[in-house]
Length: 473
Image 1 (cartoon, one colour):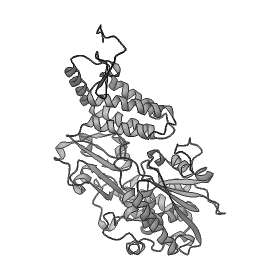
Image 2 (cartoon, rainbow, N blue to C red):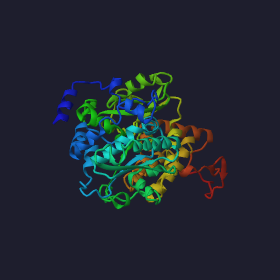
Image 3 (cartoon, rainbow, N blue to C red):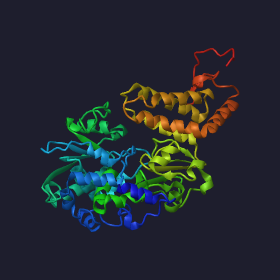
Image 4 (tube, rainbow, N blue to C red):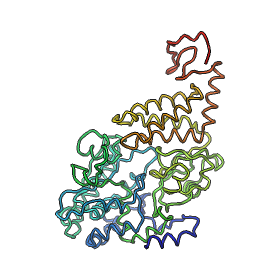
């Protein structure tokens, strides 16, 4: 009920921005303070944690539902609902919270900032989110490249154990809870929840077929919930300041504050916490000093890490940064890693680089993704130089549609979307590139990039098995 009232009150407000410093959850993103236990407690971490634990899991889950918190790792699933799928577990049998700190999405750098500068928020979040879902332990799966971050996090966990905040009788509440760190080894695919579980178990990081879902059969066959670092790290503040407070930011169904990580062609790239539903243009001009070369020099924006389609400039004018608004314009919020591209960018080369990334990171379990990402990359390589036929633009679009939705996990979709976004928004550039190549060559190119001289690979001409005496294309 409360959420509807909050939502109704907000309808009149057109702009959802101007987050006050006092309302920022992550006060230390720019390391003004220390990250040890003492300075974290001065910023309000671990304050009355025992009282919150003793309120019990029903209260905790209702508070999360009232807050309108949606998963911050990209999918945006309502967290209160997700946590409520876990069994009540009266006998305290093993049941796990797994925190996904395997932040490999190109352009994303928010979880890293949390772990480096606010580790106690994450550790306390593990305890409270763990209590909400009746878990007995938390595993934090951290990306292998984050060595210093893993050290900072382990230090924070050690401090919490030493102070009696974790372990047996955590915070004196009578609740036993352990937190473990598991370091990954640089595989992007392990950021998918079931691949991550496989990896902790010591197997190859290949996603599992669902169902069974992790909430039924997860880590070591026990009920498990996998959730993003940011989702867990904001929970203590929600419990302290109430779900209604959190729900007062942003608009209905897209509530709360969010870390935005802006990179690319802006004057001051940064990671900043703002309220959800802030207009994209305002986010860039308020926190990043605008686009390099001014707003008119903007080509497009990838609003949520490399896995979502690019938005051309005319869409960026008035789009709001939240799950639903971006979905409505054919993109998505993803991890809220805003990649800004100005008109000096070779947009085809940029998307080709994304395709190369997904080809490299496919785990090879499903044929559409394993073979499809290879084809996507080969074709994108040719589109960069223009050594292609115009009809192949439709061909690569069709190919991307054959990958999307036909795989066990979302990596196939993630590989297809950048290419689809390129074709939807920048098809004329692709056609222009092909025409330039043909003009330089003096003949039209056949399918697969074949010319009368053969096929050029890495600058060398591969002998052409097809005799090209008669030119009927």
